Length: 108
Image 1 (tube, helix red, strand yellow):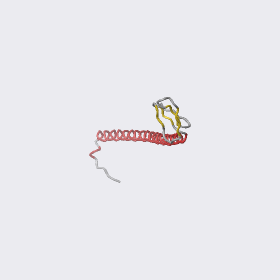
Image 2 (cartoon, one colour):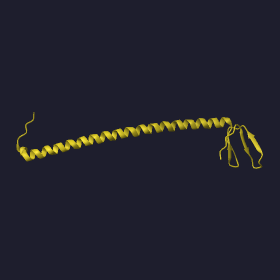
Image 3 (tube, one colour):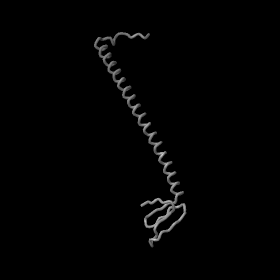
Image 4 (cartoon, rainbow, N blue to C red):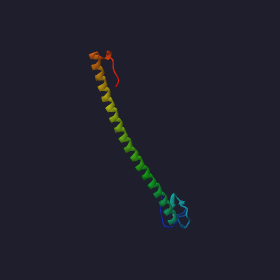
């Protein structure tokens, strides 16, 4: 159990209150207590960690969006290449059927 108090106060084994202005947490009977400075330091540290986690999450979301955009682009390119391939196959079939493959081809 974690207990935050202004000054470090906890029950000792004899159920007598003790008070301390140390900057370190005091633990007695599974109860931790912090003084104001230590608590402020911990809040500050956790705030920094939280900001970093939010920044990392935003970067991750941006990467996800960019990956989705790239995936769509690649599928579109693939689809256009498949269409071109089918057109070329159709042209080859027509040329083979017409017997024009034996005709000389002149370059321009």
